Length: 99
Image 1 (cartoon, rainbow, N blue to C red):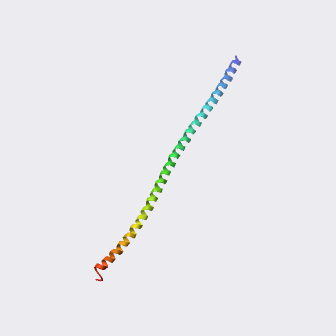
Image 2 (cartoon, rainbow, N blue to C red):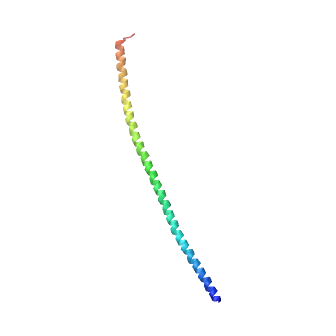
């Protein structure tokens, strides 16, 4: 009868070890899958951030071009206004000579 109790104890121990190993393997797979999902989410979010930064850079380039064009046009307008003032001063000098 004692050998039956020993056999049951050994069998129980072996089954417990097998169940433990099975749980460890299953948890490793679940952890790996979870880490993979998290890594994928992080990479996706980084991709969105990179895309947003690229959009901002493009808008900044366009704005820089617009500002450069505006400065060129403003310079031309200032030169034209200066010439117009000179012409007006000449006309005024003819109309009201040395009052």
